[in-house]
Length: 166
Image (cartoon, rainbow, N blue to C red; front, side, top):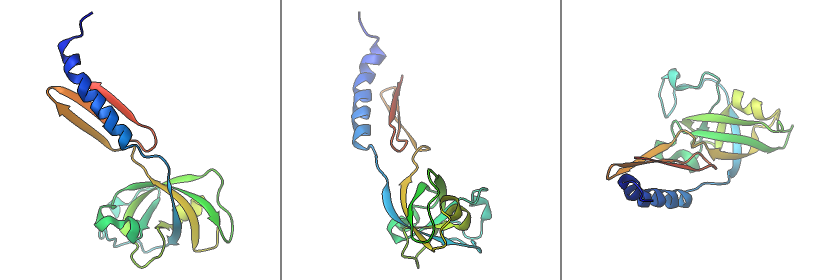
């Protein structure tokens, strides 16, 4: 049985996208230190005095120099989980998603969480906890179009999907 012409043209594109997506595949999270900070939260290095950029659930954070990336981290979403606390304990099985709204240049922490975010994953009285964190890539979708074929490649963190449209 003969294949339709568009499918023959798109097959190399699809296979190339699939191979590239496996090379860009992300797996495990990083480990770091999280601090906490309280109000006032404005102004921020990312959004100045614009409070509309803050999530309504108050799950936001500032990043240290290691993740700041010359302000490219503004708006990124991270999944954060407490892995150990010196004074108190981590909330078992609790992972939160935070939006980056500021730069914590004076902190030695990897991520500095809002009080709401910090108390959601730990009951620690300490100012710092050990965390596991990973950038949440679910909302990143990239399209590639070549010779009338359109390949949709999504990189959602640890799950990879590729779809071919023509």
